[in-house]
Length: 358
Image (cartoon, rainbow, N blue to C red; front, side):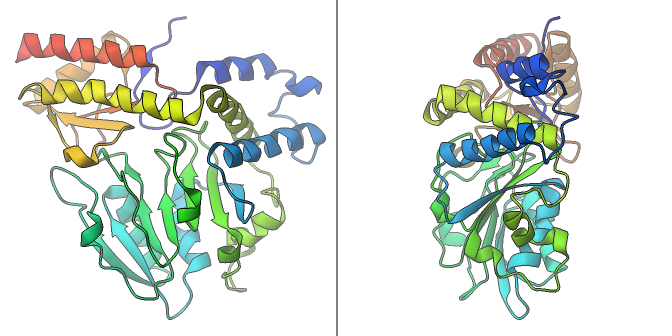
């Protein structure tokens, strides 16, 4: 079987090494005589891999002990509501920075639950970008400040995070574990797994434990971070296989090294951006200073050419290059597990396509 080069934005490419290990263990997990899909989440076999997944995250990004690591369901989309439900008290205001489609979704949910100040808004700007630090109009005494670290649709990414008096909250769904960063700068981080962490079905939350204590007694039990902190994310049956796979992915990243992976990610993105900058045929859709290392977005001279580009690329095993349905264009998602030789193949195709159609 020949594997294709998978440019899908999520669910996305996974490390082959982790896939092969999971395949090997699928029928007999850890000598239990059962698949990990069958094991009790209360059993010792699963408990070990559950704790390994959390320990791997803690080690890779140096998560201090005053932070809890949680594995929750509902994806990042549920976190859009859980964050204000837990952290935004009556009479307080939360600052939200609108950098695109996903930040806008978080804002929409937060407004249902409390007072929101949009501290800056670049959602509609073309070429796309994240706000500059000097554009932020933050609220004195805000409950927290929320941002989206990487906009997968727009192809824009925060390169430097703002330093804020209020706790900083970040949706890192599409670039978590793609680069080192200081966890202590944040009060809460959340990320859907299906980009850099594992398969869909689980969301990672890293939260400072003192912030979790803000929650109202009237909040539903399942929607309180404190519930899941107290029960080690085992209050109810967790998505065991997805968490198992996170453990495998963190093993893989530890073997490579996060710094090495980050350098590789930057180099992969630069190869594509160099083609975009070499002429007028391809046009990047993000401001140069904000270009994402994870999602490279660009346009061709016409939508007809874009359709042809996607079809021809697909025939060569370059799959998932069609841009998000809301904006069109081309999007190459090159997450951690995307191989450098796949970028080489795309660059070769892009140059050839330009010669034939430019």
